[in-house]
Amino acid sequence: MCIRMNRGFTLIEMIIAIVVLGILGVFTFTFFGDYMNTYTQMRNRRSDHQEALYIIERISRELRNASTVTSPAAGTSSTTLSFQIPAAALAAGGDTSTTISYSWSGTQLNRTGNVSGSILMGDNMDAANGFAVTAITNSVTNCYRITVKRGTESYQTTVCPKNVPPSSLGFGGNYADNFKQ
Image (cartoon, rainbow, N blue to C red):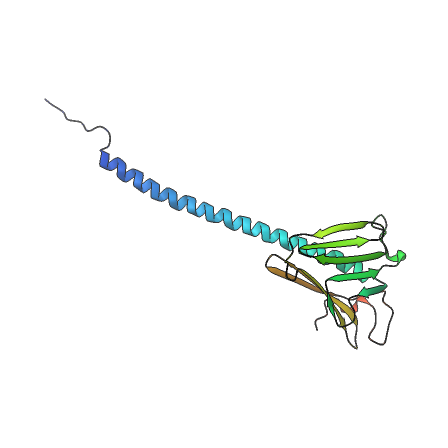
């Protein structure tokens, strides 16, 4: 009595298994590669978003307390912003600069205070229009529209200094923050 037993796989079966596993591996690694690429893009966008919001919040907080804004001129747009903050409006334990200016050059936004010196506020900003301040003056208020562009997104807010004395062009006060014109 002769019993014939097949043990193992034939060469054709092995090749078919390798090809099928290879195809599954390509799809799997392509999926994970796309996932990692999307994750990296979203992380970079989140970083750009957080940095832009920090810049806008810092400028807005200081500008709200300004007593004199020297640039930009009424009705114009500029890449620099300079203002004075009364000593009484300074936060305890913080920066004691009373003269502050923000200036944008190339892809960098710098903040310069008469006490704190120069601080890099933002880097890798859009080279064409990364930072702009527009003076908005009308019969209601004197406000400043701040625009920051990071990556592909543009962020904008409008701030009205509360310590600017009333004038024929309008009044001081933060009553119109985020005022749309």
